[in-house]
Image (cartoon, rainbow, N blue to C red; front, side, top):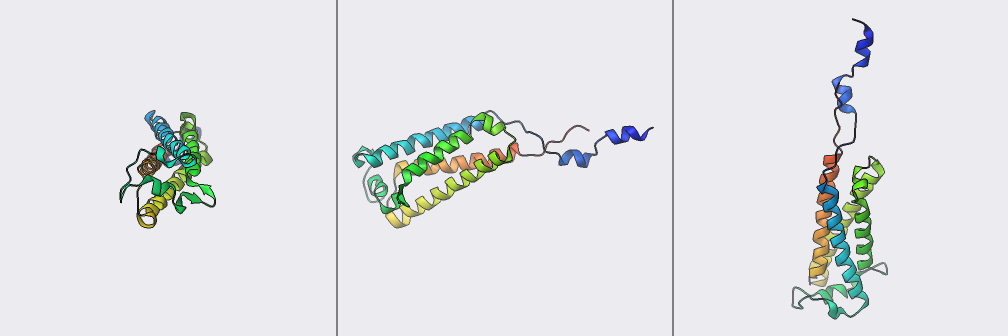
Length: 172
């Protein structure tokens, strides 16, 4: 037995420490793109509504649900930028981050960026829900759809990142 055969073998501990590409389930980027495009559609509708008549909203106006009250509130603008534009930008970025090639990429910066973007999306959604409930005292159904889609994208991104970032064990 030569020492040469021993040097060619990889120890189990070294093999398990190596990170390799993990197969991306087909449904993952597809679902991410569907969620992001749905969010983009709602955000685009809210953007059109923001610059036209608030009567476009097919949203009941009562004490709890009042889209007009929410979309015309001071909270609907952040640093002079209508929040609807932030929603459009977010969902455009999430659409790009969820294309299949982006999910298959081993680029850590891309994976981290997608994760951080989803964290920013859910953080913004939580802030806006708080504003609707406690500052504006009304709920916008379209805004709620955007918030739900942001939460779904966050969950999908966290789950997808965890599933596709597992270390792979190479046969030894």
